[in-house]
Length: 410
Image 1 (cartoon, one colour):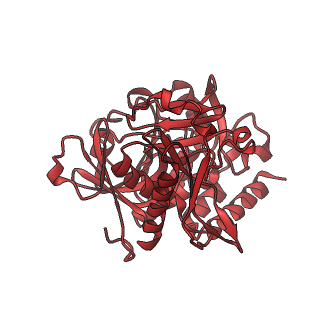
Image 2 (image 1 turned 90 degrees about the horizontal axis):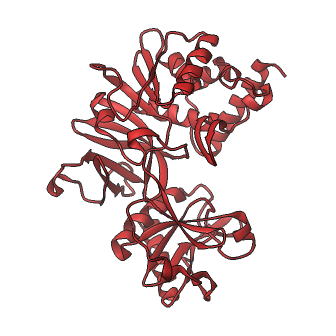
Image 3 (image 1 turned 45 degrees about the horizontal axis):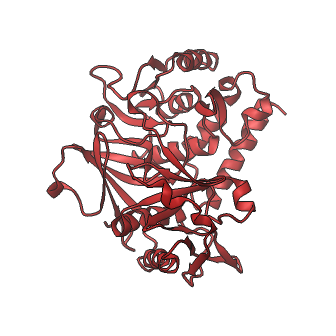
């Protein structure tokens, strides 16, 4: 098949996938995706691979991916977030953090001749490749910068849009300060070990989310890097510690070999229920209740062996308290609808599973509210914070609140 045919098929599938999620692929984003030849940004790959709906790994450091060309569906969703938040991108000045070239070329199509695109990456190999690929595709008016974007990129420049294509644990002041007031930052931000792409609008010294999507990215490098810690709990099962949690490994020894207790919420939920929102609800409420919220990850071999049965092998909400581990279980399906449950091990297992299920029911009873994220400078006094769960990071104080059934009302 030709490049044009493969590109058309890819975008047709993206539009269908958006519709299946209850989303709409914006016409200008669709047009950009149909215009830019993705194969020019994936040199060395077979043409068919360039148009598969997945990330293309470009550089590894040991077992860790440190650079990639993002999956088309994720690019489309984040560009849609940006365009929705700014009511279109035509004429906007955009900064991309994490350069591969492909996303920058799509942005160039979207901002048009009256706008501008700057893309920055810390790795000179990445920026050199981006320059070459952009030129080959005819986008040599994109400004490519090799620098650590934890700091201001170009002195005196401000942007209507900053879109970050690497996973971040924090939001440095430079990102907020380079935004125009009312400008939008789209960033994959990790909280409690859970990553979502947030579109955040600047209001003075604070950023407030207007949309969010589930996502995953390679982690930011340089001065903004933040290492995720893992603690082994059994062969192929780990706890992810991302917010300074302290755990005594001795309490984990043999914990999963103790009898498993379970509890179920007794619900019948539709397939489109946004369980990533439930995960953050659990993170905030269980942190207040137990003080130690963690994320359980498991290899497929451990799941197949029945060691654990998590809701998602790559990141399941869990809590550890008084030598008892509880985590959100795999769903229980009946007639195309599902129930929520929790499994627990340890001395207080039955009660721990029951407490987690009570928080799940509370989320559903509240209307399954999505989170609203507020990001304020690190020096912000407690009295100036909105009500909600507070995470203190290196440069910022992040507050998570949840909307009521009147959507958009905190």
